[in-house]
Image 1 (tube, rainbow, N blue to C red):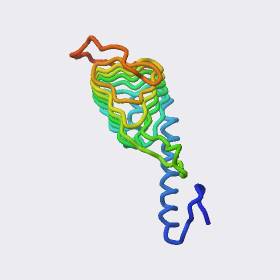
Image 2: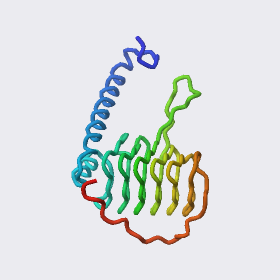
Image 3: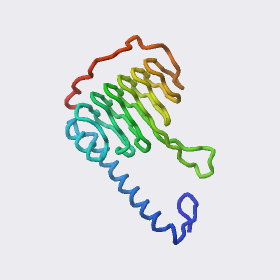
Length: 197
């Protein structure tokens, strides 16, 4: 007997494979539940369920409505950070977002990509680290194995495929350096999120 990717199923591996499949189904149900939680228009309620699911975030940070996740237990968000509407956060490998960082609407962060040259189309996981006082513009995409330095700015619609040094402004597809950020010693606070967003 073969499984869906064509590998043989034997008596020795049927129990581990079955348990793994059940675990995957429960995770998919949890992610579906969190997707619906994302439409509750009260930050405190959403935050309660996100933290309950394993997402590591303090009470002074917020995720706006419509967020989607892969493995929320792999995600850590620092203090006074905001995640915009309809963001996608991937925690299959560690995703760390620093303090006072702002991710605009529809930002997508991926920690996994497929190897298109592998006959089994295997996965390749890699962490993403976003520093303090970072701004990521709307609809930017950040791919696996990326480190974004403190104070960096990513323009709207950029696709980040390389590490970004601190206090640099990057944009484009693929993202490249545009300029340096003039503010080198930020101390601002993002403040209170809109109540019903």
